[in-house]
Length: 206
Image (tube, rainbow, N blue to C red; front, side, top):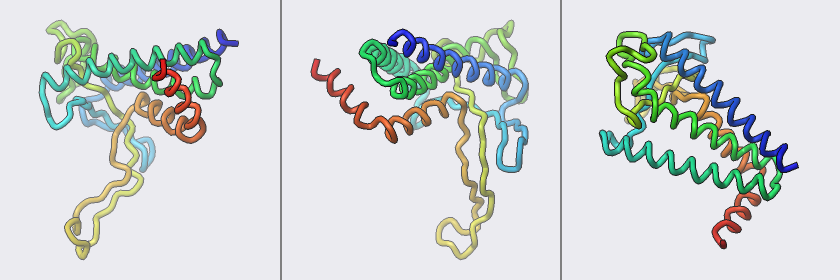
């Protein structure tokens, strides 16, 4: 039974990574930065990149973030292996697998994309360009593309502070890896809150 749960986790992680990376590579090699494709009036494929640097910190901040992500994924992977070995419910294992797959998907961008692609400003990026990539190892940007502007309007002039400004809901642009993390966390908190707390308590007591 543990083996089937383990293979189930591997399947979830592998499938999500393949889909996430296939979509990101297609976006990078077919669209220029900030170019979009309208799927419906409220759903766009909008190519943007996330440098992943808090408060505009440059090289050191980006490098620290990439290393931190790698360490965090290592801990999540170790935790997932423990869950499988101890025979936790597959639903719980699947949620953690979603989070791990999402984190891995974005780490791949940060580690490799700066070397594998040239920039996308005013051009479609080339895979393995002759002149080298747009950044060094661990300094790549995360590719985002899902944009859902469900409401686009201008706020009334009588509204204090924001009156007359453009308002868009939902403004964030994200990718499949981000979605996997959010879904995994949401399901954990909704269905496995106590299981998560108990499993973490057992780990910290060791």
